[in-house]
Image 1: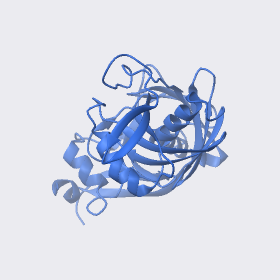
Image 2: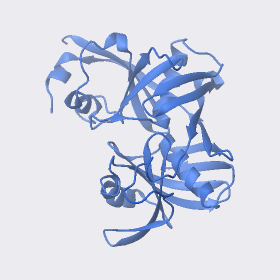
Image 3: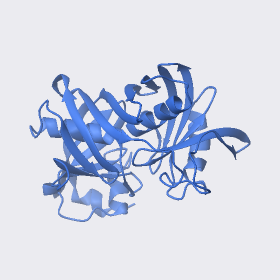
Image 4: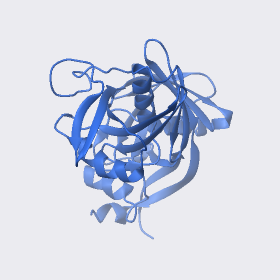
Length: 286
């Protein structure tokens, strides 16, 4: 069948799927065209991104690099981090004790439960500061600002948890609105580094519903960092309490936001398969 060039492990977190590549199996540069090919639904292994690790770190127990399916590198991914934790657990590199992971978006603390099925991650503190997210304009907390997109008059708040998010209040979020409006907001001039987008409905003090458009990936059924961002906005606006269940098309995630707005998420991870990628797949760049 040809030369095997890469070995991978595939997992999903509430339908949001990533493949994990160990650095020892990677002896060439992961260029954007190669990443796009590997992640492609029809020409590759169908993935919402690529996780590469573990690398050694001077700041944490492990280091992780995260790539979007469009070839860009992400600062942080909640689902990606949880999947990577399960991968480390499957390799026997971690047990049930707390461990740390360095990402481009900061260091997180993680713990694996229930024979690897549940992963808890302290994602760090969120910020609503325009300069940190970033959002154009004067320095401010970006909360309930007006924006007009495709005839929709919307109110959005922005937040960073190591990566940028735009949270739009919406009466009844749907996949179609996420695709229509999210794709425009991702690249809006308000967001110099582009942004992830969530459409948020507050159900009650402990439950919210979101639909998600991910920067560099598009529509997705679930997202860990998006869950954290939307929950943080709901609490900042006084609409929710400390413990928030985030309802997404792919399932639910439990979020805790303390008084310092340090966010902890907990959710399931499911192994899918291990496999080989052939050189011929990589050579036929789309």
